[in-house]
Length: 218
Length: 218
DNA sequence: CGCCATTTGTGATAAAATGATCAAAAAATA
DNA sequence: TATTTTTTGATCATTTTATCACAAATGGCG
Image (cartoon, rainbow over all chains, first blue to last red):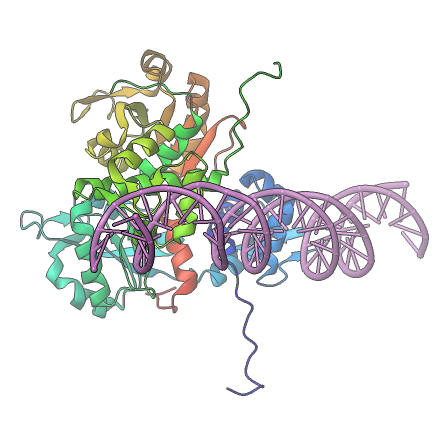
């Protein structure tokens, strides 16, 4: 590395990155509604954020707006998709063919937002060979080959908590880089693996802190 | 109000509250594993947080540990459940009887963490009257009566994005106070209503920012 | 019993995130 | 064309959040 190397782009805070998909979701909605121009203020009102926050977040990546006018919806949409690298479709594998796995594999909303479930796995022999839409459930032993074949970097864990950690190991072993975990446990993974969690009970328990107690029993 | 009123307990940051359910989940896991005592350091390692953060978070609510020893797992568990008001079971209603609604209504993991789905609603006449486990799907018109009957404060929205905002209105009208929204949109609600969101695509798009681009097409 | 190894709870400090302000630019209007 | 209104992007100030570091307990052990 010499002093003429490309400048290191300033480390962008993860909390900023975490808001971009929300911005994208909303800007795409405006686009679908035929809105051509929007402003940080309008977006802020739709999202419950300050306009300053939205402008500052976007300014990390360039200048997308025009003073006095605001943002061109189609252009901003494009730019956000580029930044998040979702101007294409990413292959995703799914482990767990229970009710939740079925719901995820059957959901038609992934594709146009940049993701496609390309394979489903389960270790229950009764489920292996079964079909979910056009996808046939495979045994977990097949994971490494499928990951290699699709160059897949993302996986969903939709198995019971008791099996999740072991599945995570297998996925990482197979080359998966990011995991979306629906099992209600915190996974132990190497630092170069990214894990995100979805657990509705975490949200419920967050809500109840602020509610007046009103329960059924116990 | 006079000067002898109970002191206002110092406003606890919401970000602290948001971590408590994670702590509870982990402490309960330790309890189930037969662990009797733990420490902020052990919890921190399990959760990928600093021990200081955990101690400081807990210190907002009292002194639960013993110097030199750490925390009694059963006691800490109890205290966290009390703080979050989940030392009981909360009734929850679910709107949307598609694949996702089925998965949620069939999930057996809610009950022992403080929640029970007491009713399911859908506006599709083909679904109304159908059964999910022991629950019969009702028309959305029945929401107000059921909410009153169970004194239910929490609802799940599991309908398509196009219907979610209207459902939210109906729920709020019926007296619901907190909403867990699985539809991929940001709801517009009055300030006294709490909404939390679950949208896997948001997590995927967060992941792809950090991944090397590797797509199928487009 | 005294010493050592632990671990908590907390005040002080540092870092990060948010919010306020404003010049400059663009479009609308007169 | 000149003026007003709007809105961005940047800078600075404030608030919030996280980390550090240590006194005070606690239990184990020789």
